[in-house]
Amino acid sequence: MGAVMGTFSSLQTKQRRPSKDIAWWYYQYQRDKIEDELEMTIVCHRPEGLEQLEAQTNFTKRELQVLYRGFKNECPSGVVNEETFKQIYAQFFPHGDASTYAHYLFNAFDTTQAGSVKFEDFVTALSILLRGTVHEKLRWTFNLYDINKDGYINKEEMMDIVKAIYDMMGKYTYPVLKEDTPRQHVDVFFQKMDKNKDGIVTLDEFLESCQEDDNIMRSLQLFQNVI
Image (tube, rainbow, N blue to C red; front, side, top):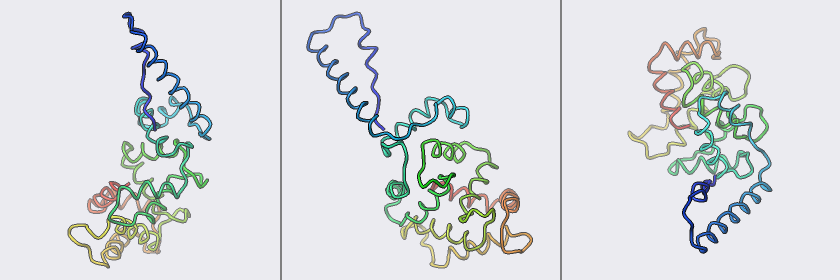
């Protein structure tokens, strides 16, 4: 996202610099100015004030500045569409197919279903996943698994997410996973979560099951590490 190098302290020094140094600093200033102007013509979205985001997230203003520079480096327009999101995500999982999981993850980040993710969307989700309470993280995870956003998780949705995670991890996991491992995983978890056996898992069932079963919680924490 383009590092901003401060030169003011150098300009404020009391020592006189040779003329060639002054020329160099002027060249740097003009180059940075041109780059900033070019960036202004590209950017179509600017985030809310950092003070507002600082109040809404668990990040400091300095952390938000660093995150924004990184976001802008990958997404100069200030927003990221699904295709770009998939390309970025695939870089972290070269041995597997991350496209399906990236699709589900993108939809979870895109809370307004606008087809694009702004910096505010990105940093809000990241704040929950990295520094949110257990309850906040579980609610966010429930939303990820609730693919059709009807307020429930059915077995097919859970299977789709879990299989996408295994596909993303690739064939080089250790120990080597059997082909039916995702199905076995889902069968065990869904049976524990669907407390009234009606074929769907509600948010309350999800929260209760996760917090009372250490095995489920450990598995969810492991899956959260791939986000």
